[in-house]
Image: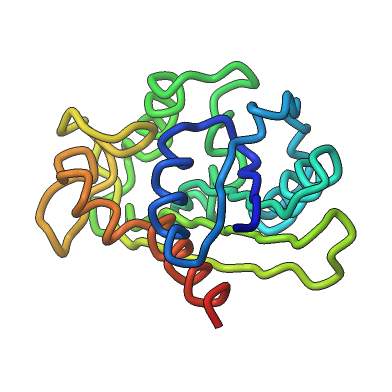
Length: 196
């Protein structure tokens, strides 16, 4: 069984990835288990940030590493907040502050023009110097509503309306959200590529 480190301390990501990689014989751990500190995300794209995080975790642990970077892109804002989704309103942003700023910027934009997508990039590196990491991507189309609906999820979920299901991401049961989501898509692609 091959050890693998996730460049995240997020236990939810650990559970999701462990379940998906189990058939492939990977023993999945978070970087927190190895005291790997967070690395500054200095990239200007999701791909760059995911590579920075995966390389950092692989370098410190000596293990294969997986990292993801994700965010929301709003067409009326020229793709913003994008890679700055987590710190859209300020370096020490909260979900509430980020959502308030998003709503403020879209207040005068007609509903049909508030199209958006969640995007995720997941990178797998065999080692820190891996010259050809596996890069997988997922995107999930929707539009932004101005009033929050739903209690589930996190981040922008209460404002991300999913037209195919007639509700926001925050209203979807976790298993439905995971089957549709940008991260779920990218993870399934990664599992498929690792299994080849």
